[in-house]
Image 1 (cartoon, rainbow, N blue to C red):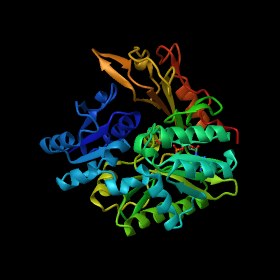
Image 2 (image 1 turned 135 degrees about the vertical axis):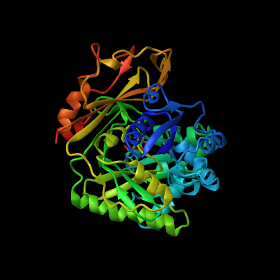
Image 3 (image 1 turned 90 degrees about the vertical axis):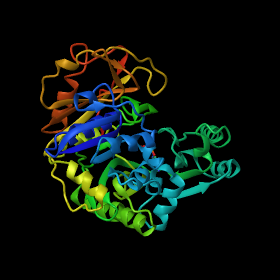
Image 4 (image 1 turned 30 degrees about the vertical axis):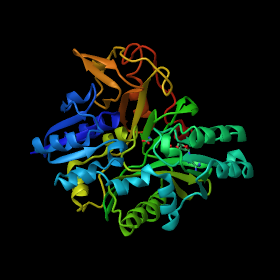
Length: 427
Ligand code: AMP
Ligand code: GLY
C-alpha cells in the first residue's frame, strides 16, 4: 500500500488528494502544508511548498511512494529535479520543462518554432521598444504579458493607450513583478471562447483529460478585476470530437513532441489555456505546468477511474493508458471568496454550515481555511470550493448553489458569483 505526499494547500490540492485517497492502492496521504479541510483526508505536516530540501527529507524518512506537486512555484524552483536526483518518485515537470509556464518569452518562441497554433506576437526587452509598440497599435488589438510568474496578475488587456503605458511603466520600470518584467510579450488579442485543456504526459505519450471553462473575473457577467478563478465547469459543450482531435494532435502532442526534441521532456500535467477563435480555430494563449485551480476540483468529480496509477505512470515515464473514463453528466465548482478579494480582505472568520451538507453529489474542497481547535476559519482569498455533480450543467449548478447562504455554508463578508456557467447556459 502506497504513501503519497501532496505538496500544496489550495483547493486544487484538496481535490487531488480526495481523488487519490479513493485508490485501493493508497494507504496514506500527507500534505505539505495542507489546509483546514485536508486533515479530513490525511495528515498535514508543517513544511512550506518552497522548502524543497525539507520536503525531500520528509519523503525519504517516511518512505513516500509518490509525491504530487499541486502549485507551480516548487516546480519552477526545481523540486522534480531534486527529488529525481535523490531517487524519489514525483509527479510533475522538471525545472527546464516548467519553463513553458514560468517564461512567456520561452513559450512564445517554443510555440512559433514548432508551428503550434498561436496568436501573432512581438517580444520586447526595453520600455522604449514597448512604448513604440503601443504607439503603433490600437490598444484593444493586443494583450500585454510580463515574461515571468506574476501571481496571475501579469496579463493586461488595455482599453486605452494611457492604460497600456501605465501598465508597461509599472512592469518594466517600477518592476512591480521584479525580474518577471524584464521582457514583455505583446500578443494579438483574440476573440472567441476560452477553454482550459489538460493532458497527462510521461515525456512522450499523452492522455487527454476533460475540458473545462473557468471564470476569472470576480463579479457576475465577467465584470471586475481578474482573479485566480472563481468558478469552473465541465463538460464544455462546444468542444466537438473534431475540435478535440485537432487540439490533441496539433497542440498537445505537438507540444510534448517539441519539448522532447528540444531536450526538455515534459512529464506531469500540461495545461493549455486555449481560445477557440470566431473562425473556429483553437489557439494557445498560454501554458501552465500544473492542474488548473479552480478547474481541477470539478475535473476530479467526473473522472471515473483510479488516478493514482496514472500519476505514477507519468512519473515513471511509462504512461500506457490512451483514454480516461469520464462520468456522463456535468460537474461545477462555485468558489466562495473573502469579501474584498482579489484586493485586500479580512481573515479568521468562522465558517458556518460545513456539516449541513447532506447531498451526496456535493463535495466541498477547502482552499484558504484553517482548523483552530476544531473550528474552521477563513484563511485566504479563495476560501471554499463548492463542487457538485449532476445529470447536466443546470442540475449540477442547482445542487451547488442550494448549499450556499444563510441556512447553509456561509461566513462574514462571503462573496461568490451567482452566474457560473452563463456563457454556455445561454447557448
Ligand atoms: P492568463 O493569466 O495568461 O491566463 O491570462 C488571463 C486572461 O487574459 C485569459 O484568461 C484571457 O481571458 C485573457 N487573455 C490572455 N491572452 C489573450 C489573448 N491573446 N487574447 C485575448 N485574451 C487573452
Ligand atoms: N484557473 C486558472 C489557473 O489555474 O491558472
